[in-house]
Image (cartoon, rainbow, N blue to C red):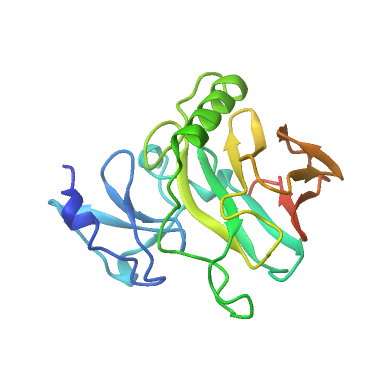
Length: 217
């Protein structure tokens, strides 16, 4: 049973208070921010913390509907104002990296309210990249396609664009795509338009350096 979009838009995770989405099989309400999922019983989402299950701890029969942390990598900020920030990236998902609009001295550095819209040229850029690098999977332009777009990684960094780059975790590995940013995206000091990431690589956007833990948790 599919939940009405109007109902889904009113729900938030009881732990993170962040927006939620419907799992692929329609059996769970999933919170990417807290990495928790909540069952749907007789068409009613059970949004109670005690009923939540950590993503990756469901049975193999149920696993098809929700992204599992068993196949997630971790993106963490190694240098910059947001040093120490960590976010997970499950397989089949992507996150945009961009500049926070909050006060640069604020402690709030991660926007859990959703994702930034992509203009037509950026959508086409993403489509071309995904088609070429990920064997024809649909590009993500929202909660559709083979890649599920998760909340943006918002950094307090004047040197990065509002929508700077996007990181994808697909069956071919983890790749980064520059979104025609003003100051460019660099991997190990070399500017790139797109590149698959190896375990020891350093991704630089503005004055922030990011590493990706490729050991699946």
